[in-house]
Amino acid sequence: DAMVIQNPRYQVTQFGKPVTLSCSQTLNHNVMYWYQQKSSQAPKLLFHYYDKDFNNEADTPDNFQSRRPNTSFCFLDIRSPGLGDAAMYLCATSSLNRDRQETQYFGPGTRLLVL
Amino acid sequence: SQQGEEDPQALSIQEGENATMNCSYKTSINNLQWYRQNSGRGLVHLILIRSNEREKHSGRLRVTLDTSKKSSSLLITASRAADTASYFCATPSSGTYKYIFGTGTRLKVLA
Image (tube, rainbow over all chains, first blue to last red; front, side, top):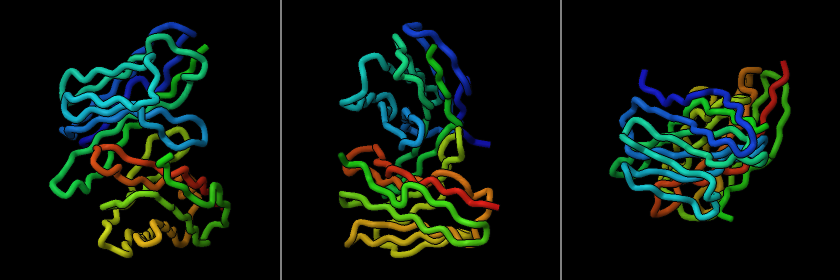
């Protein structure tokens, strides 16, 4: 089945130790998104790609970086995780159509714990 | 903030009852979407309603849209324990590929 896959599902890292979360999709969608979601809150957009065009949110910390080497894969790099970065990280994709009435497809998320 | 508002923030009902949650947004839209999120999981798309539609049904779900009031509602009929989840509305951000999510409603259906 076409889907959005995130690995790992759970990630434990140490304070200040770089970590990479990965996302892959078999939907061939041109837009990919990374969200951060903390407990009982709405997903907060960190950045998104339209094809290879990178779009950073103004309030996304410099500590967060992203790479999209090809259509299928997108990575979230956290260079120096702090305790406040512990959260669920959600990857999503969408495919723009002429009417822009697109739907987002989400992966299961990676829960990051920072010790 | 452009974030949409949802109410109630939390809702607890008995199995078999109907659940209604509301979403308000701030800008003009061409569609509005509802998503469900089970605890610790990703979001699942439920239904998309276009700006020229007033009501849409999908199984036990009924969504209405009032563009004059910039509001939408999601009704879940004959709720089940498995409907326990958080529900979010989302609207496309004009001129971008981004979505603006509402604050979410946490629904608990008691068996």
